[in-house]
Length: 380
Image (cartoon, rainbow, N blue to C red; front, side, top):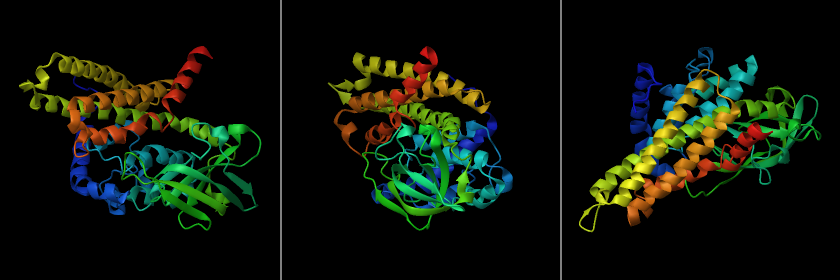
């Protein structure tokens, strides 16, 4: 089916993204995988190309374009290129809205220009060793000391954790209130007591620096409070729909790309004297995956349009996230199987997609959490 949600401007932007990936990312990606981190030069190149801060107002150096369809194009093209390490989606679609919607004028002037040029790489630190999807389990604390906070605690699985110059930390600012006693504090690179732990060794997305962060009596100025005091829970809930949409868009794009490369593979690969594509089982496998992708694409495109119009609710974002990422996981497994022994070789895209994509059903809220959100909306 021909997609109908994009205009000529979006198509032109897609070509810009593809050119950027071919020039600034693909030639260096294997080295980044070996290094376990992308080059800062790539972030600056993304800034020069106008790929960072798409929705940030022009007065702060951004694109001034809140249309989520541009973010969808970015997610789709980065996924097709297998370039998960350069976490532009995290920077633009997850961190960006916190800074633009919650930041004071002074905070915006201070942080957003570097955000848009790529000089300031960002991260958000929610997950802790003992608290993942359950925000009530957060133990990192920030004590009020007059003109500053004293921050103590640790975070783990933080994307961009090594590179980040600006980290939004979710911390407990009152001992009461469960998840409602949390605030967002911005910690900047070089702050005394802020330390990075290991660049964690993952099974996939090797070039994406994912780290442990430690805070030992970190003095955070009061002006680095982002949003309302004790208001983090509400802020997080407000912006999670966009995070989950970004993950969902990448999920269906990955499934479609896997289907494309596997279609080509089974046409060329022979077994028992004929191409795999001539075997009925293979045709049935491909037919099932193609149909599931087509149905999912129709739903995701509708969600993209609704989100762009500000009409997508948390329930449908959760549906999109769990369905698209679980589809991605199934398709990756089935496509690897159809590749046979070659599918297990890392030089084949299907192997890399299998390991890189496995995290999709986990971060941004696990599949189980997505189902809980949907179930509560139906049953109370």
